[in-house]
Length: 290
Image 1 (spheres, rainbow, N blue to C red):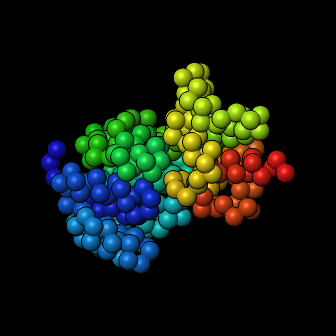
Image 2: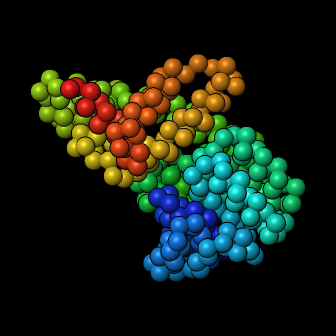
Image 3: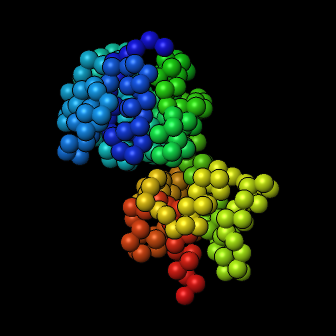
């Protein structure tokens, strides 16, 4: 894989590790984050160049990689960097946003000769750290072909899902499927504990049967232990569920389970769990015993 000049904007729990993998793949990496000192700390650890201004970070690069919290940040970054990106630049956005915002930025980018891909990810912080993310991509096939070798630095499964916005719709589908599953695990483990079973043995047995899942394999033990200080926050999952429900309403599709879990996560936030991993649905389940 040839080395490229890459700007990574957004060094949160996911972006930090993505940028590190790009550096290990011998790309020239400049980084930027709005939190004071974060970009410099990344450079102190990995090398490269640190910037506090997104436009400066993105100036004279071949590829921009973004990992941002929500639509507002994506649109703000678009305002900052599109005027400085050269024609032919490739922008890979790993944020989870609305499909509408992805299509808007795609159109604005195309108008100045920039290829934009909406490429949300699944696999959590562990997947980002280990370079095993699943990446679902929307955009032009030619842009996807150019992006594959870049994303391969941190993505184990990279799939082109269709035109602009298709990546975001796929991520929404993922979230619909996963939120109900995590609540089901919380209920099942609570049921087993209350009945006096050894929770770890229950998890071991279930992983051998039809209830096995990524969530079961990677989150159930931590849920059992009440450990929530890692991963994807309750706040971010509530944001994702909001995007899903808005899209579903526009499509006239009922999502009763997803809506219910969204309300449950609001209860977790009220308990002080806004920054806990969203598998803290287990904590809500346990506290409701009393």
